Length: 242
Ligand SMILES: CC(C)(COP(=O)(O)OP(=O)(O)OC[C@H]1O[C@@H](n2cnc3c(N)ncnc32)[C@H](O)[C@@H]1OP(=O)(O)O)[C@@H](O)C(=O)NCCC(=O)NCCS
Image (cartoon, rainbow, N blue to C red; front, side, top):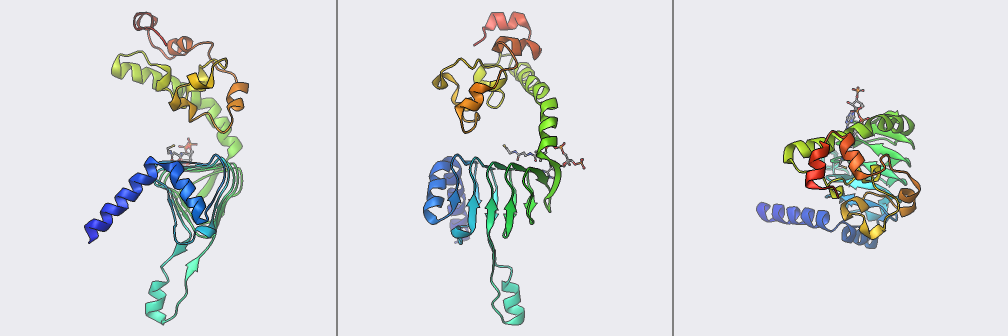
């Protein structure tokens, strides 16, 4: 019996990860509010017992292993000890444009303010003010979103170049644009048909193509990016560059 239940639990998990849009539609039908352009990356678990207590805003990203738990059966202990029934539940609200890192648990009665980031494996027990980066167990604000923005501005380019070089060193293959999911806007021309953008990258470009189109690439070409990453020019010539 236990084996059968585990099997169904694993199966449900796989289905949720493989078809996140179907899962989101199913949740909406059950009464969970999920805003437009909100995405689940991987298996996300939303408490099925009280769908009307869960609200997720627009443009949110919930990643693998995130769990929203708007009730608890902890009071079963009180029932046995005191002979009373004291059920426990509360609303969870995630406002617009919130990222929730992998494996985080959001408990009942919590509101996460808009434009916030919740770090991986956090346990969110209290409200998080808008515009925060918060992490840990219990989840606490570690910096503002502005501070995080400035930090990313300093670090992102070197990280992208290191990724390109590592890929080359490990495979001896000159990277292709489709190897770069998140990094694609760094080198891609904006004068490109949406359909010609690799699917892997298209998923990462956000809610509106015009955000991508209005921004500017750092490099004039993909080749310039590869050269600046430290990939030998003769190899790029020999293998060709997409
Ligand atoms: C929260 C996060 C965005 C912060 O990124 P960052 O600024 O580069 O983080 P840093 O490593 O500089 O950490 C800053 C401080 O926060 C702490 N911290 C960062 N992430 C944490 C986490 N998930 N849990 C607990 N503490 C965390 C660090 O220990 C550090 O503390 P210190 O100053 O006392 O040393 C990042 O750590 C994170 O968790 N990202 C989510 C990753 C994820 O879930 N990916 C899923 C696939 S998309």
